[in-house]
Image (cartoon, rainbow, N blue to C red; front, side, top):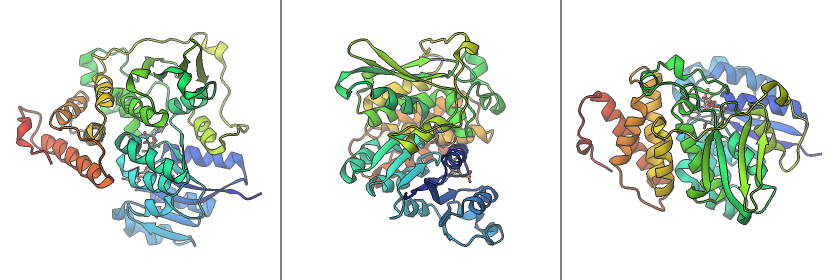
Length: 398
Ligand SMILES: NC(=O)c1ccc[n+]([C@@H]2O[C@H](COP(=O)([O-])OP(=O)(O)OC[C@H]3O[C@@H](n4cnc5c(N)ncnc54)[C@H](OP(=O)(O)O)[C@@H]3O)[C@@H](O)[C@H]2O)c1
């Protein structure tokens, strides 16, 4: 049997490493042919030694000086720079592209994979948020299949198979509520990096962990769902579910609600995207509901989690607003992780950036990337000038 040839973009991250564990367990039917890292070259070198991929890519060129030493034993092709991801995503011999890069940096490669007609197993939600229109159009045109890895969207995708799209009344995305679900607004706004990184149920990379604490992650997922499932925003609900066991649900027009449940382990949705439409024996622990005893659900408080309220608004606006929403968040989260701003400032910066932008529709990739860059500059200017009184109009819009 011919093996399925897999490219993992962002193999050194949390999703990338989980994907490799899944592939280890699936056996010879899956062959890793390309891997990419940004900064963690030692980790990439270990992966290259184990999987012997035909290609590796290093996207952060500032790490290149250590390359010769780190990869001296590697005999495949070494690509470098951000564009190398596009090359890997469109490799003729590749069947499945796992998009596991974090942030908007993954957009050109996700688009290239969609244009090249690949199976695009997509964890990297930011490209769908920014350029869902372009990505879904490219996939329709080339015959590419966009398969979600995000656990909520995988759950919806699985539950959708119980009916047809026109029988869906709504989808319900679940959210753990993160570490500040029960915190006072004041405690949340002044939380430390360590507190914000202390996710109660999921073990993930730093950016998405902070996004979970603000609930920006769920806001991005609403927009991701619009594109993946071709749904209007009024058919998307969010429910807080602290146990993170019900990964999401679909309510059909007859009143039936179909949910997908499992332990909070990304290997399950990753494997489903790799083996779809089949299911294979998994390596994750089975769910033991009797040990949990109960499952809880509550409506999110949109005053407590302002990022979520903004997410619903942005999802209605569509156009370029999601680009600004995402880029401002990426810049603000980086500033928070670097200790430059307090936690509460993240959402303030996003809100300010959205207010300074007039949304435009049907943009090209270049135009979207320009707006992305503008939003990052806008946030950077505010960071440089401190948090004191700022005149939004001082920053010229593109
Ligand atoms: N982790 C989860 O459980 C989870 C769940 C659902 C969805 N997701 C989504 O999956 C994506 C990956 O998340 P993660 O938690 O795996 O993140 P992560 O652990 O931070 O890993 C990110 C990966 O992207 C690489 N990378 C970082 N910046 C890059 C850049 N500018 N250009 C190219 N590559 C870059 C990193 O390389 P180095 O490590 O070598 O620097 C690493 O391989 C995100 O979009 C996230 O929202 C994650």
